[in-house]
Length: 79
Image 1: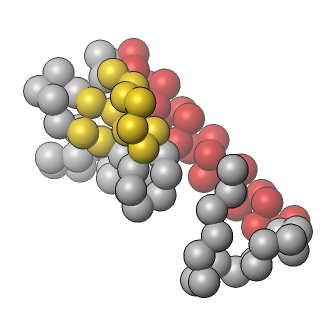
Image 2: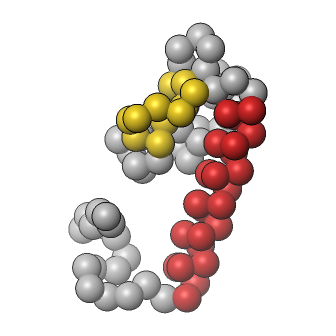
Image 3: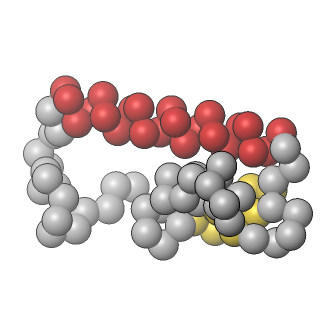
């Protein structure tokens, strides 16, 4: 289900434009690729999602949480 907040560009019921659809698809593809790579490195996929963006959270072996959309897993402390 889609979440709408007043800061969103398109109100409910108004279909997004082609550029917005493509941008969303690219963000989802990037997040999916990052998740896949991290799962292969031993991260666990949790049943919780990021409170900021709604992406499924991952957890490393040291129990640190990571959102691949909001955080850069390659940055220091990012994963």
